[in-house]
Length: 52
Image (tube, rainbow, N blue to C red; front, side):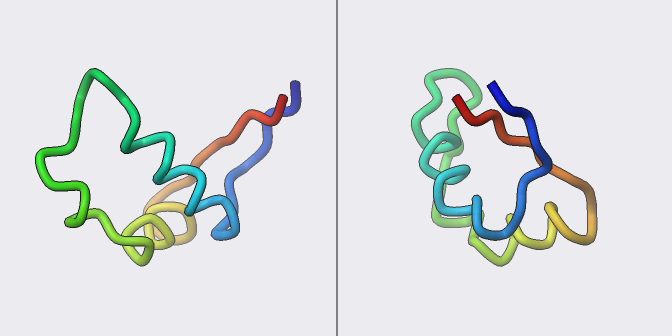
């Protein structure tokens, strides 16, 4: 396994995972855009991904 910092290239897959959760389901997934994710990964914070 490899843990690494998420990049904007990971956003599509991150959203797929986020939308497939059974707990903490988003009431309207369309309100969280790719631009929002990019902002959270590059300006407001960081994200992490695990590659298996």
